[in-house]
Image 1: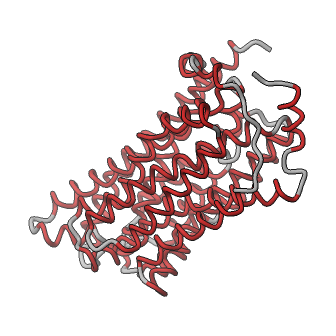
Image 2 (image 1 turned 135 degrees about the vertical axis):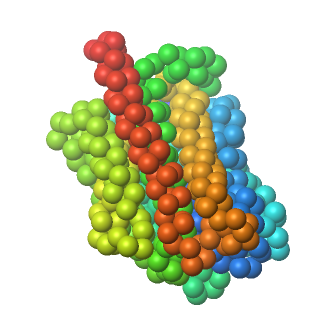
Length: 432
């Protein structure tokens, strides 16, 4: 339970240089997580040349991270509540660094896939414990600001992931991408070791999941990342491959072009926080953001060699705005709806749903695209190269892309309406 000493410690948090340095380390390590999600897809064409272009193993360079992240979230949430949030963070960072080193040295596509799963397990611990650290260590406006910073850091990581990875592929090769993620996390862990985090009694988390799953507002907050996973994460993952296959854009330039989609994330979190301070309720912010996301996905149906890139760029910007606006609000909202002693459970459940959706959406998008391209091309080798980003069959790839994205757009619209309905009902039932 929260004691006077714990509350006092929370109010002292990050007031000293030691805690400020520690918090910087936490955010630096968190920065590597979205970088790893967004950047790995840009390296796929180079990986295909080096380790082979078999479609399914190549897609699992991305999917194994997401699946491992999703599967381990609940475990790490309960682990953090029981054994401490800082210790969980440091353990997760160590696992992340080890997996990154393995990936950078991988000599087969199977080894790379397995290393990415290890990185996903470590990333889960880092992100889950970070949200819990902020929740148990800060209160009121300080907590709100901290989660806004967390959202900004996450947005910056997603924004520069494709660009940074593309430049690294051009300069040092795809192995440098995974090595870079590990170095950033290692540096973050070194700084984070100075952080002081209050300990809470974890008894309150035993029934946390049941309480949270009965809360419609919490379910609505969890459904939003599911919609975002379909409409943004999965699309962003395969868009660099589309640039390569449809317009023959290399990895370095594809990463730069992706700034149309990821750049708005830099302003999304501050803008969402500003709108909240101006009196916008969460429901209004989410409605606007999901509207932008739906419009963006519909515009991205235009990916084709015969379409003006202006239309595609407009779709990328709209999708980026839609994803970015609530990025600094969702984690904080999920934590606010949870008992303080079950902060780890809330973080674990929220991230289970978020990353589970990202894993499922990414895998389903890749599988659907693969099926539609293979249906049009009888030569399996040609189909595999096309799906890995090789130019020469732009119209075929575009047709498959449109088929998958049409379904994605429908899911975004339906999921957005469902999330807003749940949030409205949950808010109406919640006591003032």
